[in-house]
Length: 195
Image 1 (tube, one colour):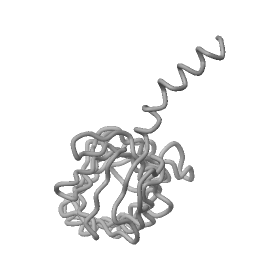
Image 2 (cartoon, one colour; image 1 turned 180 degrees about the horizontal axis):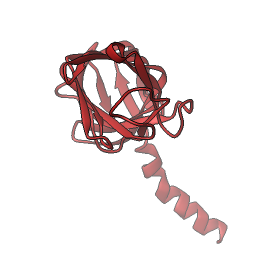
Image 3 (spheres, one colour; image 1 turned 120 degrees about the vertical axis):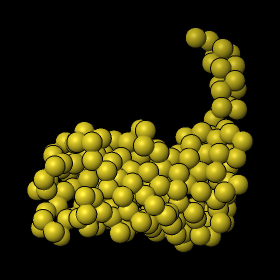
Image 4 (cartoon, helix red, strand yellow; image 1 turned 180 degrees about the vertical axis):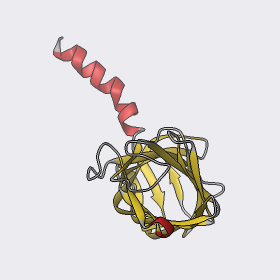
């Protein structure tokens, strides 16, 4: 390939690269709260219904931001969870990164990566680890959308890479596929756009 041809290709690619930058406002400490949230073990066909869920972390502020790491959540808790009359608790901790994928008409398509956590069932004195490719990989991920007009991050059931490990509970089993869904309102009110 000639230098001139390479230059033309480089110029043609520039707009696509520019479109991959993001703007987040206002940024800073962020709390995201959802009402009814559901955790699904799609392999076992079991679902946990939780009365609420809360994520805490920070979002970046400004424009020209890279797609990776628009925000970072350090805790994601699920509260008031029950299944078949039994109470459970579920908490995800770590460095969970909120990443941009695409943006159109006020709606961002995102991923939340780096997920790792524990589900506990006090009634059975049992627990299970939730992660991606292994129990200590800290690489579980889910897909989500963020709608500016409603200030809502909606976690989707599709695209989840979460699995069960170190399980000591009945009904579910190691390597079961898991997802969760909920609609989280951000405080402070946030807007995410690209470019």
